Image (cartoon, one colour):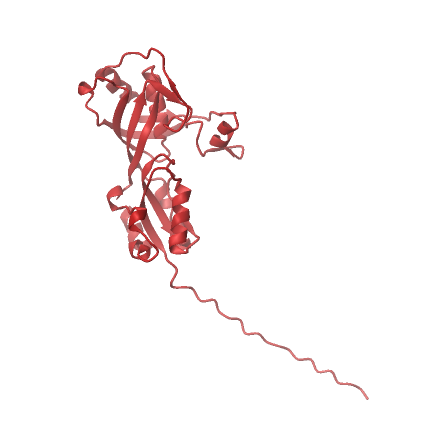
Length: 259
C-alpha cells in the first residue's frame, strides 16, 4: 500500500501597515534657556511628544540662549536643510581686555596685562574690520570635525587645532552700548546680523585681537533665523505633553514662510 502524502500550503495574508495618524508632526520654535545643549532641547521634546525623529536647524552653545528651529517627525526633519542656511541675528555682550580658551565666558579667562587704552572711535573703526565678507577662523572649541574628531574633543585632549578660515558674511554690527557714556570699554553690547556658519565667539576674539586687548563673549542670544523670530518662540515653562501638539506648526504652513 502506498501512503499518499498530501502537501498543504498555508497562505498567510500580508497585513498592511497603517500609518499612525496620531504621530505628532510639524515645526516648533523654542527659546532655549542657558545651561543646556541644543541636543538637550531635542531630548526634552522627544519626551513631550513621544516622537524620536526630531532635529534642529542650527546649534546654540550651552551658555547661549534664544531661538532654535525644531522639526518634529520624519517628514519635518527631511525639510530641515532648507532652513540651515538662513541668515541669523544675535544680541551679544563682548568682554574686552581678556581672552578665553573657548572664546566665551565658560573658558579659562586670562586678563590682558596693561591693555591699550580704548576710545569710542577706536572701537567703532575696529568693528568695521569684522563686518562684511570676511575669512573667519572657527574657535578651537567647536563641533567641526577634523579627521573624524570634533575640534572641542581635540582641545579637551590637550591638542587644540586650528582649521582653515571660512568665508562668512557679517551684514551688520550695531553697537547697543552708548560708547560716549562708558568709562570702561571692557563690556560692550552688540546686535549682529550674519550669514549661517558665522561664529560670534570668533568675532569677539578677532575684535579683541584687532584692538590688542583680547576679547570673548560673555552673553549671547539668538533672536532670529531668517524670518523666524524669538517673539514667536515657546519656552519649556509653557509646554507640556498635553498642549505641545497645539503649538506645532504644520509643515506646509512653515515651509510657506520661506517664499
